[in-house]
Image (cartoon, rainbow, N blue to C red; front, top):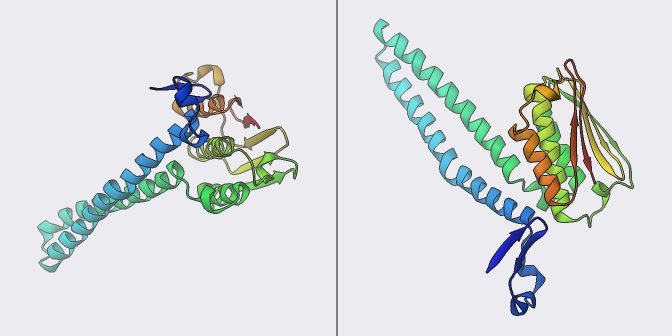
Length: 231
């Protein structure tokens, strides 16, 4: 039998304990496996359906346009709007795919992958400034995989919150020997007024706990907002 604990998954009995360590999965690794499956479903099932629906609407629009009448104008407008929404949904699905199952961590160093993803989340409207201490674990090519993945996901969630909810124009990311700091100049919020079960904050703190680390979030109305993760 396999059981899950905060420190990982282990087998029962001496016989199972003698199995190779590679057969054991930590809780963080199990979460990543589940995320991978969700990522595959988005890529193989959801995105093709959105793409097919958009292509079908464009074909319908061309058909109606060939026999345009005054009565068809409202229909063409509705088709165009629906197609635009599908394109937005496709962009969201692709963005979710990158964030749920980031191949960058398998192909790039943590710092290179994090900078690339941060720039894509920030886009043209948010300037991101990095301050990296060479002694920080983010510069270590042998950094523990679970902790590296957790720090990566905490960074992504903090940036998404800063740009999506806080409308931040500037974000400072400091990689120190003992912690990761993300500070944004967004609108901020009153921590006391936020539901403690709010998914974004809860997920950051929960993932950190799985690898023996902590995440704190400090903010106030008007900002700034600081997310800190121990490394």
